[in-house]
Amino acid sequence: EPEVTQTPSHQVTQMGQEVILRCVPISNHLYFYWYRQILGQKVEFLVSFYNNEISEKSEIFDDQFSVERPDGSNFTLKIRSTKLEDSAMYFCASTGTGFNGELFFGEGSRLTVL
Amino acid sequence: AQSVTQLDSQVPVFEEAPVELRCNYSSSVSVYLFWYVQYPNQGLQLLLKYLSGSTLVESINGFEAEFNKSQTSFHLRKPSVHISDTAEYFCAVSSQGGSEKLVFGKGTKLTVNP
Image 1 (cartoon, chains in turn red, purple):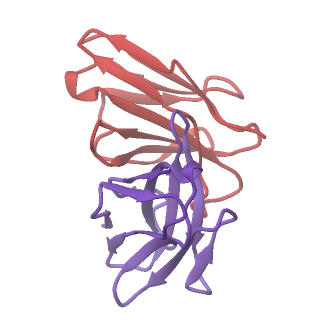
Image 2 (image 1 turned 30 degrees about the horizontal axis):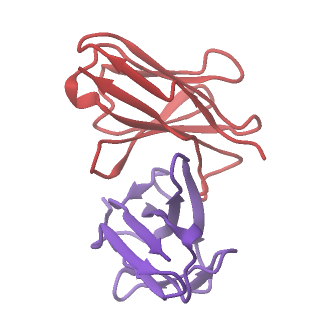
């Protein structure tokens, strides 16, 4: 069964460093998303991406964050200068022809900022 | 804006007992409603959804949820749980015809004991 894959599964970084989280969405999907979950808190929407551009972003997704689809398969989330409060589990998701709530999520990338 | 409240952070039950996981939402517009499940070390998976039509929706593994508009609830129920149902369950909403983002509750950790 097709699945969304994310790398790395866990990354530890120093505050101020740049981090890139990678995702390979399901191959025929067109809509891509990043969500995050800080430990003990809700899963929060960060950004949605369609047709090579951001379609919606939350207030969390400030200038420190960026997304890119550098080729036909990868979808990346970059955090330019990490802060302690960026420590969280980051989930990538994708969906096919349109939004009906059925997002397919990856297993997540745990980011720890020291 | 929407919000989701899952009052129970943890629900321990014995195998073959019934269970209800509560979800209430707040929204100024009509919504779609979802339950996602996260098994240990896996990503979020869609369990069931309400988009329109019958207010009672069912999953393939015996869970059901009922959309109650007057009580703004979408509680998840199963008449007899199995050990394999142990997981974290997330209720989520999105607005109909508007933003495609999902707004999640904090999750309920269901532990089924033998």
